[in-house]
Amino acid sequence: MKGRAEGLRGIEYYMQLPYSILLHEVEDEGAQYWIAEAPELPGCKSHGSTVEEAVKSLEEAKKDWILDSLQKGEEVPAPVERDRYRGKVLVRMSPSLHRALSLMAEAEKLSLNQLLLTILAKEVGKSIVLNRVEQRIDNLMDRIDDVLNEKTGQSSRLLRI
Image 1 (cartoon, rainbow, N blue to C red):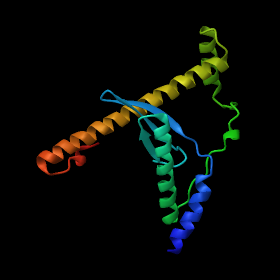
Image 2 (cartoon, rainbow, N blue to C red):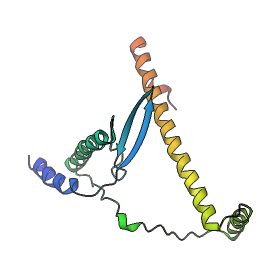
Image 3 (tube, rainbow, N blue to C red):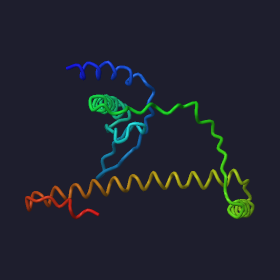
């Protein structure tokens, strides 16, 4: 019982911390809903039919995630400091890459900074789309597993690569 009391005292502290919230709008078989996640707490996600529902549901998931970690004696990650990001990054690269990017920027009539921002933004966008596609594939695989399990009574999860 002592561990539970310590976890409860700890949960109040952690629930007051400003964890980041990422929101993703998802469409699945014509139905739209929102997924909310706390990126500092790996795997801590929830969903709702509105942004408000998703965020409220995430608060419960966050509480469960933190409480579970405390009860297992695991470290609970601290939120990322928001003031830590100023929008300025120093990037070191090889002279040949610097030259190639500079020539590309010149050809596009952009500053090197504008070109780098454009490239980075495109890559982040691709990553978000790929994550959504991966999630939909996982959902479809789960459905296929469910159907196969009903038909055969055996798990087909071994077929996944």
